[in-house]
Length: 292
Image (tube, rainbow, N blue to C red):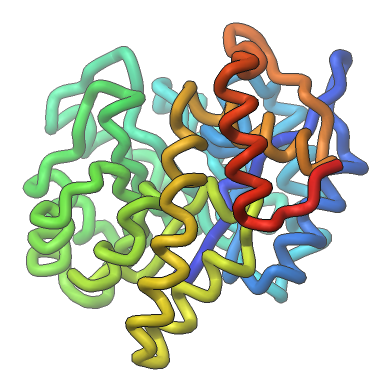
């Protein structure tokens, strides 16, 4: 149901609110770039500092532009089960195709707490749920045993895994079965991820290079592995730089350099350092990307 390249969308902003005109242009660019899905209101979209009304606005626009063309997977996870249910119900009502739920952060739930959290959200909606394991941001990791239990919940259909651990992905495929969707949350290991049974990627880099990320997928699918490897290697530098500071600081800086949105980012995040921005600019030039 969910495969290929899904873009973890950056949220363009003004100092006093959202920049919906730039957001619409970014959506159009993603569609033109050949991605297979878009993810508004994820951590790359600064979900932690978006109001519920802003999240609704972003999901509504994404559905209006993209529904029926590509999959719309709305980020709706928080560290509160009740709030996550509320946001996920909102995503369903607004027409999202699925919800992406991050592992609750800061609380540090036990494995049983994690299971009950995701189970409670899944039971509260009629919407496919994709789990999101990113221990580098949340501290807590979804264990193989917990994911295997959750895979038995009817509308929990997959996981975005940002561990970059190919042994873990291999075990997830073996234990959860071929119907359970495995999406990479780490751009630099997208290609290796596919080789051990992965189904796609939820990508930060595709904000900048949607057509190149889509080319890795299409080349892999058609058995043109050398072509996929060539693009993979072309993108290694940008993948690395997009995480040289806290995501989405570099991604938003890159989009600003390309003239796709303004530089505004919400506290407690701040704009990129001058030294790293210089490196990022050169990486964009190396990829022959147009600068604004």
